[in-house]
Image (cartoon, rainbow, N blue to C red; front, side, top):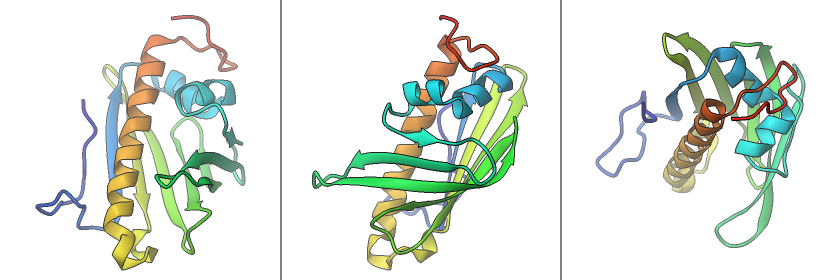
Length: 167
């Protein structure tokens, strides 16, 4: 299933609400998807190599990136709720922002695998002039990350420690 939206969009495709909701059905069991989301050696394969994530309550997430202007920046987050293997919540911000957002990741078993839903809310704190671009950019980013997660989880079997046990 392709990524989907729960909120209405305008004629220009910009979400009208202040939340992004992206859902992807992954053809892998919930425990395997959970390990891909929380085991650092797996997470770094499908997200990016140069990130850090402490999957626990109060844990930190940090991922450097280069913005469209070529400037190096970082996004950071703190885990504020942690419910293995069902999901977690993080307070999330780009270092250039003066507002925080909230990212919720949830996993739900399906007959064929796992439904992963990412909800990114709190965009009403963004400057109004930039909000539509933030929403579109972050929707595209979450869709990309969910596609990468699904592809990796569906083609790799991860052991209890999250280590790759082959395709």
